[in-house]
Each structure stands twice: as structure tokens, then as C-alpha cells.
Length: 621
Image (cartoon, rainbow, N blue to C red; front, side, top):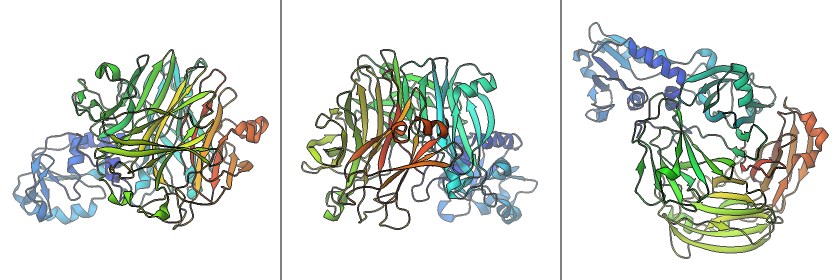
């Protein structure tokens, strides 16, 4: 496993990791290494030497700390020594593993060995022009970054869609620094784009990028770095993958999640007539060694190692069925990625149609919470995982509960089904499912509406609030399939439990909704399923505004829908606003779904006349 700390829930992230992992920082660190003369001593005041030398391996001779409780512990492969021993160490170079290190250099200068030189990570800083907060380098807003699976190979193309939501938080001019890595990890292009002001929408299309830079076919990744931002330090987006010949393949996936994880789950095994390809994309400048990544049938504890190296920032396609022969849907697969990659994509090919979806982070820092089984009645049904049921005359809607934490030995769950008006029409106990038990349940209780997975402890079991599932939708006529996955929350109660419900604008109560809905185009129409889940009684109906924005961010039309509590609605922008108004909004226009009465949950996608459609959960800002 790569010895890095990528995420701290209490701190809201790990800025040091992002500062070290940035490709420009990596290039500078390699230059810094070149100028160091052995013996090399590392002074590690903030505990980041492990991450530094994991991401950028180099032989060092000794490591020093100033905290007496850390003396004798292992740091970066060395037994940590007391800083007071540095003068007699014989070091020729002292590397201070810290940014903003000017004061630290001044303080330890009397301890330097005679003739030793000092280098710091300030030599690996990004240029000031790339910083949103120049007064503090390790401010999280300086590293608003994310990866994007990006592909243009003469058969399939990709298009990223988002908006300058930072403008709504007071940002001025915002621009994107963008680097495109090819499949071998090589840099294909680096450029910047200025985003429209006032919350305007924008898109990055692989066909346009390929034409602009004269590139050959590629299947790689973009790194996006937003500069001049405020409010959010994550680049959020929706990504469409589509057939360049207007063929039937069409997919939508959510943003990549900026934090590498040890494990991921929610990867379906192939059916007999399918090929499942895992796109493994190295997120770092250090190779992934052979044998560092593995696949395993969920709960089997018999991982199969990937016997190949993956180069820095490289992208490789892995045939899941070839690595795990005999593992078939509805069984699920666990990816053991060793913190080398952010949320990977997988591609399913069947009968000439392709769909792409993403796996999710499998957490290793959770423990069962006994309080969930005895939640106060004031919280009603507690944690809910809502998902849409599409028109049953055309679509099959299938749900697969998915273990999403290494400590989840079982899933005690029930399925509640609601029609569009919020009437519960079915309740089905699915059991206390062991970790290695994979099921696929088709919802046939209602023509359309939504369903919710909830905890049910009638047969025992444990819960931690991190309840996830994979949702699959199959077109009965065309055979096209789309799938998405997400996790549970407590929705729309006046009372709170730990950090739930979420989406408060200020202190509770007062739940709100802000969701981004893309429009599509003349051949692929955008849609959304908006769900009003409620753990307990809340407002009888929502007051949901659909605000149509043009590419410059101007609101050009507004309509209101009122969704029943525990109900849902399907929204088609071309029906709500009309074709002429959508044309006025332009290709980068979008709908902002805004509600100050409740928290909605939504899924969005595109649908065409050839039977192709896409679907994934929406993002908000």
C-alpha cells in the first residue's frame, strides 16, 4: 500500500497530500532531489516524510524529529533520531519536509552540520499565479483539483459539463489549469481555460481537445486545477461518454472523488454475455508496482493480484472476467487499489453497446454504531438510500446492496417502495445479508416512483450509516443499460443524529437543495428524477424551483414543481421550458434545482431516440 494519508474527515481533506501529489510539484521535487548531496538528512517537523518518499522515492540516510515521543519510531524507513543529534550527523544536505519553511530554517540553522546545505519543499511550490490564496500556501482552496476519465478513440468520446459555482461564493475570475495524460502516462497537452463569470456553464469535449492539439486517439485522464476559487475545493462535474457516430452507446458518470483509497467496491461481475473492463488510472508520479493491485469477489478474501506495473499517471484496461474467471453477476467485486488511484471507472460491453459507471470508496475507518439500531422515533426510519424506479413498461429497475466498508460483516436491510405521490406501496425485508452474499432485486411493485433501502434489525446485524447499493436500469426494447451507485443519509427531519441530516444552510433545522442538471442537445435530451425522501414527517410538498441558466450564468426562465413528501417527479427540461428557450440557453446552459424547504436527492442523464440513455446521481454546490 502506498504510505500516504489522503483524507481526514475532521479536517475536510489532506492538503499536504494534494500539495505533494500535484504533477508540477512532482517535477519540482525531482529537480530538488537532483541537487542534493549525500549523506542526506530529513528533518520531519510535520510528519509528512513518509508521504513525500512514498510519492517520490529517494534514498536518504537519516530522519530527525523534535518530538521526544517520536524518537525511535519508524519514519520513512528509518528510526527517527532526536533533532539535537543533527549537528554531529555528518549530513551534507538537510531536507526540511515542510512548506512555508522559512521560519523553520531560521530556527534550526544553529543545529546544521558544518558545511551542510538546506533545502525545503518551498522549492516545489506551485507558481503564485496558480494559487487562490497566496498568503497561505497550504490553504485547501489552493488545491481545488480533480481527475477526469477522458477518452477519444475514434469510437467513443467524452464531454465534461459543469458550471462556475465558485462565482456564487464570491470568487472573481476563475480559470482551469488542465493537463491531459495519455494512456502511457505521457503528457499530451497542458493548457488553461477561463471560466464564464456569474455562475456560467462550461464544457470540455474530447473531440475539440483532440482537434485543437492534433492528438492521436487516446484513453487517459485529465487533471483539472481550478484557480481563483472560493467556497469549494473540489472540482465537481458530470461526464458523458458517447459514441462518436451517434451510435447507441451512452453513459454518464459523476466526478472522480479527489482522494485515493485503499479499497473500492460496487464493481459488478460480468454476465455471461458481457465484458467488464476496469479502467485503472494511476493518480501519481510513482509507478504502481506489479502485485500492488488486486481484485476479489466480495467477501471471498482470495484476492487475485495484477501482475503488471502501471506507470506514472498511466491508464490501463483490465478485463475483470479474465482475472476472476467464474465470478458472475450478480456477484460483486472488491478492488484493492493500495491508495494508488482515485475513484475508477468501469466499462461494460454487451451486444455492441457500451456503458460506463464508477465504483465507490470502501472505507476502512468505520465501526458499527449500536445507536443506529435504537434510534429515537423522532428520526423515523433513520438512514435512507433512495433511488428511482423508471417507467416499468419500458425499463427494468434493479437494486444490489453493496458492502462499502471493510468492517461491514452483514447488511440488515429492507426495501420500501413509493409511488410518485409518496404513497408506500410495498415493504420487503431483504434479510441480514452476509458480506459475501450478493443479490439483485427487481422492483415490480409500482409503475414508476422510487424505492429506498433502510436498515431493519429484525434478524439482528449491525449498521454504521454507510449503506450503499448499485442501481441498474435496463431498456426492455433496446437492451441498453445504465447504472449508478450511492449511499444512505438521514433525510428531512427536524431532529439530528451525529452529522445527519446533511445539506443545512446554517444551523438546523432548515434543509436546502442545490443540484446541477445538464440540458443535453437536439439528439440527446437531458432529464432528471428528483426524489423527496423523508425519514420522518416533513413538509407535505416541496417548493422546488427549476432555474434555467444560459452559458453566461443568466437566469432566463424559472418554473416551480411541488413534489409530494416521499414522492418523486421526472423532469424533462425541453418539456418544462420549451425548445425555443433551451436554444436560447445555449449548449452550455443548465438548470439549477433549488429548494429551501427540504433536501431533495436526484439522478440525471440523457436519453436518445436510438434506445440509448444514461443515468447517475446529481451533484450540488
